Amino acid sequence: MKKLYLALLGLLCIQGLFLSRYVSTIGSEKEMQSRYVVLEALYPTDKVEDLFKKFPKGFSVVNMRHYQNRKLLVEVKGDPATGQVTGVIIQEPIVKTGENDPEEYKSSIYFDNGKMKMADGSQVPDEFKDFHFLFQTFHFSQSFFDNATFNAKKAHRTLGTSNYFLSYRVKHEELARYLNMPDDTELIVNLTGDLENDRKHELKKGISIETTEGRNSLLELIRAE
Image (cartoon, rainbow, N blue to C red; front, side, top):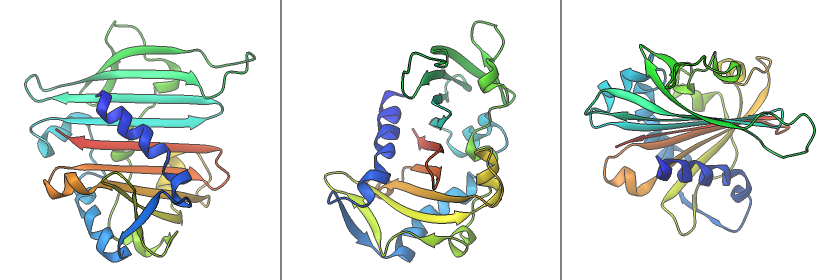
């Protein structure tokens, strides 16, 4: 899962790269939108374990949330040999101030019948009690693009990598509610992919969401093994 985590960290840089000299155009908006049709079969998926039906060889998912000086991360891997979904949860401050910093911890978890459980048998921490992955709540379809404003004239690729992304501004009730924001909140949504994985017909797609003020953000990356 380390590779997936590093890929997610790369996704964090997209907003900064978007206006920098480190991106290049790779195709038209419509051409690149077609690369996200695969998400329609994933968003939504009811239970985490249901991903095995779509990825029988296994999968990895990373979900990272930033709000109120907290980073909340859930990272899991689906093992096809055991049929189990296991991983870790992490909470840590985004910036250490020395005053009212959130508690730092990293704990092992697993999913049972769609519910997160602690590997040591303890109670799920309050910060993760109501946790759901974005893929469990977001109904993605190509109509998403019809209601969003494209943030650039063309799709972009990060130079020196096979990563690409599309960026949009949109008001979307499901995404706003996932961030615990009012339904009419304007959001910046970045959709990412990997040309090399696309060429091999291997899924590696990410979605990042943030408020235009940058107060609240979410990144989720799904990769088929």
